[in-house]
Image (cartoon, rainbow, N blue to C red; front, side):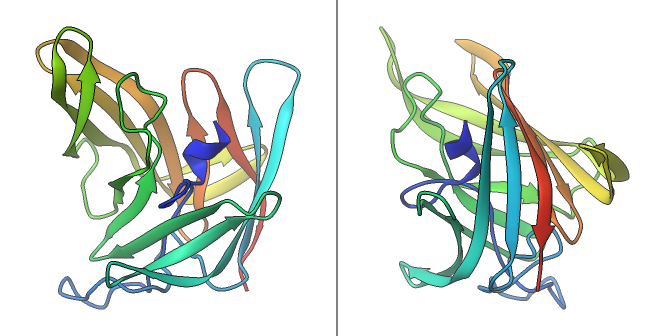
Length: 211
């Protein structure tokens, strides 16, 4: 779904912050290697879902926004004005992500660390999310992000991207529900998101312009 790409405190998509000079640098509302969302940067995507239809949309970095005292980068859908919030620092990238497609998951976007560029290939990190399961009530779901590609090239729609990081996102509710892959995302250095795959659709970058 397009919304999975462009989320915020009211939607989803992707982040912000200037490349860190040390591991102690704070989060910043600027740009990072895998989220180069400087003011005016634009990113155009196609989304295909196995039918003959193709959804085309573009995102634009429109500046910073402060939420609960934290500075977030704003990405705006150039067609419908939907906004997404992103931030990063210390090699960690955050967004407000849409998990509403998961039965029982919160309807509102959830704060999530979607990328850790300093994690090695095969490494992972986890997050917890409260969901409702029939007959079981509210339980903690485990969201596991695993680095399944690191530093190698990937071709997307005829374009070759270098220094790509791939992240597989799984959700499980031990011992009730085994791990299920809900999203596989690929980020290129100097570009950001280049492809996102779910069970039902694939979104891929077509063009981008970074001032």
